Image 1 (cartoon, one colour):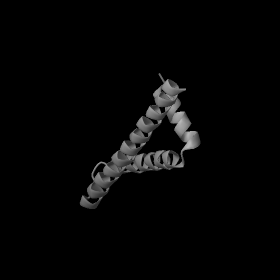
Image 2 (cartoon, helix red, strand yellow):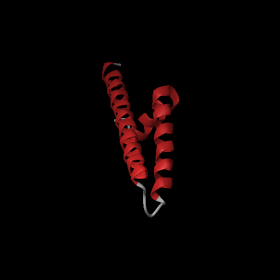
Image 3 (spheres, rainbow, N blue to C red):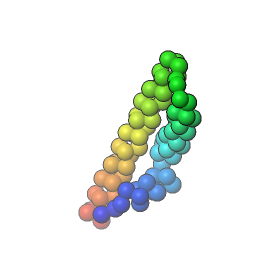
Image 4 (cartoon, rainbow, N blue to C red):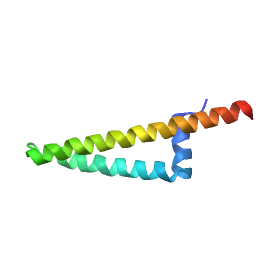
Length: 81
């Protein structure tokens, strides 16, 4: 069975969408961490925080879908090859 780390490495090197999603997710995480350093958020900052969290989750979901697709492809190739 192929590990998730191995699949992630394959996707990082071969899938531009995955790389872009990962970079964007990381950038959003940094933005969120900066925002969370503040003790009190304005209503606009609360909205921004929720937007960032939703966007991060969407990117993470898509990355997970790409991992599942890659795993299925590798497993299918392993059983038919």
